[in-house]
Length: 454
Image (cartoon, rainbow, N blue to C red; front, side, top):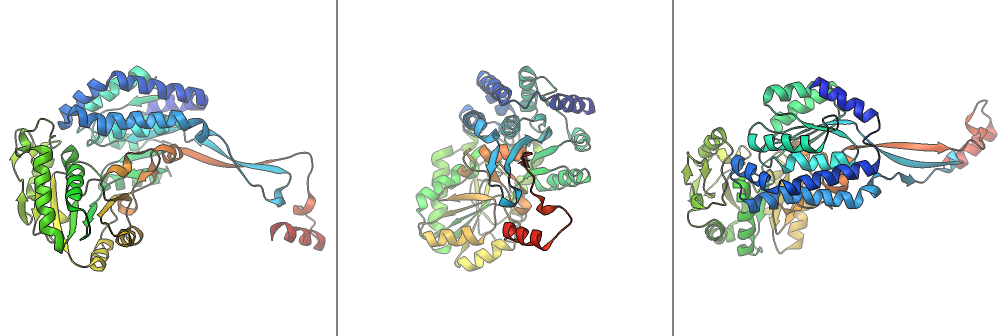
């Protein structure tokens, strides 16, 4: 690992990654390789997570291709120097912000979207002109192996390389002097990453998670809310960092929503979801057992079926839930949806703000003032009004957490900026030199200085 990083450092310092033309070539090469390996990516994701080819392209491969297309369209503009106004006191001069890559970056990705969350940050890092080491999760071995093979086909190891392995490899990588660390995963590991980075003063971007609430008020269009909640919650078998973790529904429409959600589960997944070939599985036995213990919270309104052999849990809705139930003490990260009723927005807002800041918040309402009330007064990473999860499926806005759910953002321009250091430059003319700033000082110089700086 040390040798690879030293080679990447030498390659970066040679200036090989700086020309925008070479960055474009790297992105186009990556795009072509992904297109050529689309079927292989789908097979790897099916092996690791039971994803269907449709879901694999919609949520992973297609999103990466879209990010590359965005970068290819905008990279020249993003990489240009940004001119800014020069104060009169610095005349004659010009001022600008120079966009410079960090250098050698480490990208650590999770297992739930193992292709997209490895390659999309890589796209942004390459566009910004960096070298990169990717460390995918050991929990998704098929996708990790494919990533290692693909990246080796596209890039020399001194530019981009993949290092596989588990905790030992993670710990060793975090002891190396990278110029930037980009981590996606759970908050406990995120704390370790930040602690290790702090020892070397390495800047970090942390994309974590949390218990993202979904609020449904009495004015919401219930059938539509149910359809979209079911889609976002049970996508990837619930193993999505921005999935609605639980639902807060106004007491007056609670029964209506529960009934509509149960109906939507049948429509989208069939009456026997575990027999649906397009329904995924839990990543491993450990997480299967953890999720199984959450089914004891409240009452199983629908679902609850499990298959230990296939590591599947059917889309499950829990009713009669209280804040102290086990399902409300940790991020669920699986196909289990607790539903809590409420009657007072103020009390709900107060309760939410007493809890850790989540990665996302969703609200279904036809009342604009209610939407604005929660959007303005509740602290969270990002979210949607009258939909779920889709706010991250765009390169036109940044995606990231806040507080306990992470720091920093990426996607599109935010992604380019994430892997870029902005150098503030004043280019002073040598044709003349105003003597005001030099000693000896005088009253006349003081009067001139005050005119410049007022």
